[in-house]
Amino acid sequence: EVDFDQRRPCISPTRKNIAFICCTISGIVVVVVVLVIAYILGPPKYTLVDVRIDCGVIRGNHSNGAYSFKGIPYTLPPVGGLRWKPTVGLKNSGSCWNGTYDATSFKHICAQVQPLDANGTVLGEEDCLYLNVWTPSLQKDAKLPVMLWVHGGYLHMFSGSEKNYSPTKELAKETNVVYVSFNYRLNAFGFMALKILRQNSLTNASGNYGFLDQIEVLHWVKNNIDVFGGDPNKVTIFGQGSGGTSVWTLMMSPLAKGLFHRAIDMSGSYIYNKFQEEAEKDNLLFMSKTGCSDLKCLQSLSKEKVLQSIPWKEYPYWAAGDLTDLPQKGRFNGAVAVIDGYVLPAPPMEMWKNNMSGFNDVPFLIGTTQQEAEFYLPYSNISSWTINDYKWIVKAHLDKFGENITQTALSLYPGTQTCPTGDRCLQKIFTTMVSDLRITCPKNKMAKQAAATLQSPVYRYIATYTPSREAQLSNLMSFPSRFAFHMIDSFGFFNTLDNILGEMSDADQAFSKILRKYFVYFAVHGKMPDEWPDYPSNIGLLSSTLTLVPDYASEACRLWEENGFYPYAWIN
Image (cartoon, rainbow, N blue to C red; front, top):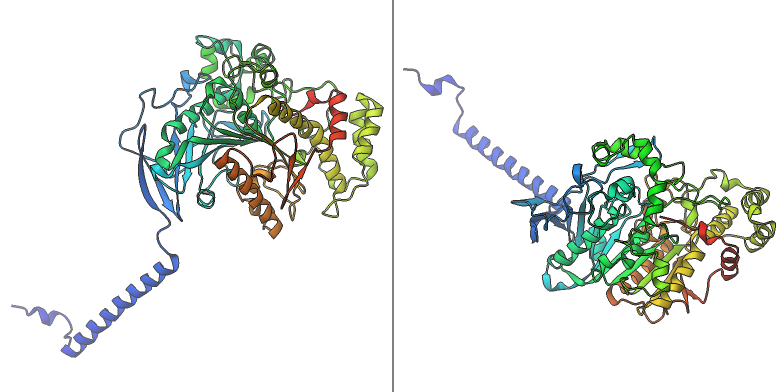
């Protein structure tokens, strides 16, 4: 027999004790190191949490005092035979999921191209109809106000999960509000009006599919938001750009009746008068580009072919690339959103003027920014313009409307004004002129009609804040903006100015706080505080403080309106 102990080196009892002590100390050191690292890193980034909605259980996460649920499906995917069809709600279709649905990450954005061109980069998918919820509470009896965000992007691009341009858990916690954002069908997939698309339609309507998606989201909110601590009877819709246009559409649509209780239109369109039949004729160019002659062919097209066939640069000019410049006489863009007799019974301004039934009479806040046009300018050298350059550009556009108009415009917007930055003054003056003509003055008229029609209060604001430094964000803005550019109010509300400015000054932070203060108060109470009277008695100028004025640029607005410029206002 072989003694097993003889096959290895002998370890004395003393050495055994030393080894044991060393191992014990090493183990203690490892545990201490792990505990120290855990203490430094803090608790886990989030904890998973399950809730039950009408279609089943969904799993989100909780961290830093708020909850998020991302990528929740609210309708059947609009693909194949459901392309260019009205929204089919998931619950109503009997297509709910089994088990627990993972709602911890965003899903596909909707199919789009960036930039808006046949050769633009194709992004997203058609299977994209998902929504997101951020909330500080999951108590059903919390009865928190709800704010439903509608993203902008010409009705052509972006999503409800756009970084810096959508709600966050931090926003929900800090404002004690439940936020919902969502994707809706865009561009040709969401808004193509064609007579051939009316085949087998019970509504005899085409186009506006993206608005039907938005209305389905409102139904989802009504049926489910209490699970997330929200009050289904205190829902505010707010949107920016074409999201503002969407808000106006929902205000006027009988299909959205009673589904929301306040509305905020941030820089939405003024022009909204194209009837479905006319748009269907305009869009025949799309049909020609696809090479299709029937519905089956259209539904079989690849998403790339659909996007490449859109008439971006020729009439009806879906890219609308001229809206941040002074108008060219006689050049008008076609419509993306149309009067279809179903989603929208008649042009919104006519519905108000004639007091037609069907629209939603809710508290309404209408906003624009002072230099709306500055986010996407056709003049890359504008920051170095001379006074002669400025006058030449104005004359080149406005002389065709009448030389007297040019002279009056130059007297109302003189190139000798100073500006708070000490430079780029001509850039500020020119973009103010374009913005007044294209959106600010027309929206004053829209607000005046709303105030004359609605029993609910109407408020008007203009964001006039000049940020502390130049702003640029490549995926949302293509021009280095310096003044109160299009979207500055949404970045301010979402408290993301630091991401486009690099950092925030005290004044930048004060601007964000002002926006949050008044928007949230409006969402909670359905009115502004007593210090802000309704329109038309006052307009609120929002900077790092609130300033109330009885009117804004009234003489300039009179020039543009009396000389027939409002038909050149923003569309879509």
